[in-house]
Amino acid sequence: MAVTTQHSGTGGAHAHRVIFIDLGRFLALVFMLYGHTVSALLAPDYQHGTWFEVWNFQRGLTSSLFLLLSGFAFSVATSRRWGAHQTFSWAVFKRIRRFALFLLLGYAIHFPVRGFSMLTTLTPEQWRSFLQVDVLQLIGATFLIIQALVLIVRSRRMFTMAVFVLSGAMLAFTHTVWAIDWWQILPGWLAAYISPARGSLFPLFPWGTYVLFGAGLGQIYVGWGAARLSRYSAFVLFLPGVVLSVVGWGLSAVENAPWGPDAWNFMPIQLAIRIGACLIILAAIARASERLTRLPHFFAAVAQETLPIYFIHLCIVYGSIWNSGLAVWYAGSLGPMATLLCVLLLLAAMAALGWSWHWLKRARPVLARWIMAGVAALLVIQLL
Image (cartoon, rainbow, N blue to C red; front, side, top):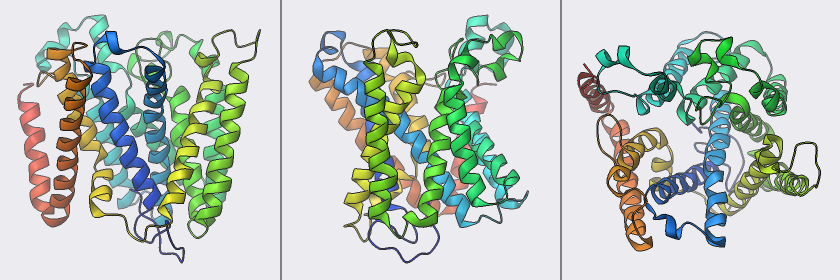
């Protein structure tokens, strides 16, 4: 989705792909694969010490980086055909269909039973597990919100202001929203998008902040950053990243603060630190990408196939209603070398999957659609 319009920039700003965003997505993909594998398989005896605390912080940046980049890519792709996305056109319909796929796959990962007929027997705990909002539902729902803003707001400048204001409001009101028992007011499936009180891992408050903030960064990039990547990386990414990080860590060290002693769980501070760190990482990647005239096709291909890689690697690592994953057999029982071997094998397998699937979609699009339909049919048949 990170396709840009033609422009005259050089280095890391290109006509067909935003190189530093593809590199960022590839890096986040590597973080995600080894993070989930290590978390699921490494024995608890090795999960301590300074290195583990550093790794744990870095692992927390994975979802933050992915969400920021998702919003950025959405925004750049929207700007490429701004007029077509401001009315209920075929382009908008295809987008909504894709966002619905995000929601569907998100719920499929947490499907609680092995057949549709068993849904009538679910316990309250199973329903909560099924309705919990994970990262795919978050991205799908936030994209729908952003697309609605595109339809409502007529200018790109107003759109940029709207996504930044909404991201700030979503963060600022997080704890206020969490204090309300939405399950007494709204249907359970809708309440799960607002609060983590009953198991949601990525509710809109505050995680939608990342996607909206990324959309704003994408608009700034399209406006002038594509042709001035050095200045964009310095003044839009690096400096704000440093400021957010310093302010976040500084506030977390304040004694007797009004947000209490556990500053890390105070969302404005936590997200300031995480967004700041992500902006610094992206600034470094953007600067490095200026030396590239073309990103090797392998990296761009894999970076564009994060959706199937995400879904399939979760099934491999954690299992699903269709299969038993590595965590079922080896959860918390492997040493560092055995865990490293699993990480390397998973990285190789998912890279091969991403590259081959990307090639198939371009070289044999009809065959790729039939394969998708066939796999979906087999998965559904097993639930009948």
